[in-house]
Length: 197
Image 1: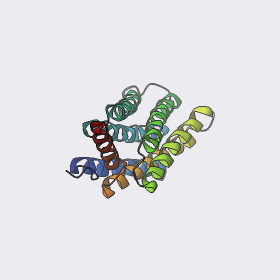
Image 2: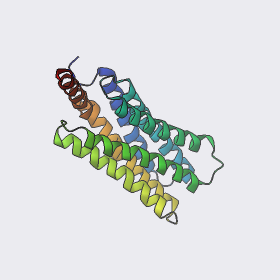
Image 3: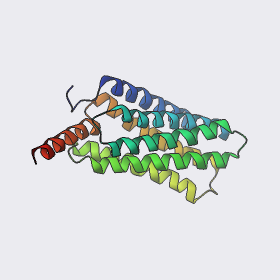
Image 4: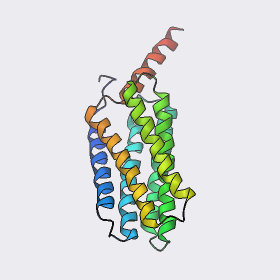
């Protein structure tokens, strides 16, 4: 396997989760007349897709244990918070949106960390990962800092974060030469250098 290319299963998963996240974000934005509860459900499902993608990176054995751990934790937290929102519809809609916001914040910080941890990745991929991570933190932080905003506005901000994240995942899957492949090469190169010492 060429360490600069992602395995086919990861590319397929990224394309699927990216398209699904984009579709759910578009649905949430396109039908503002839906009840806030329906929008929250759509966003929860999108966050589950994002979490699955993050957890799938654990199976990519070329990553360091630390990076696989960060991906796993971000994915699990995202999925748990999304499932809590789906499983307990009795909570107020604002509480549900806050849970989703925390999930996106955790995911966003993991994206920012990975963008800076992968030094050999092409600059545009690192920049894309960092920008997506920053937006995934900014939009939910706005929601958390200003809970008095109308719930529809909160849902729109989270829908935009889901769209941006879905686009980044889709590009990663389609291109196939993402930060992940470069990270595996870096780890391999470092291991070889350590072996020479």
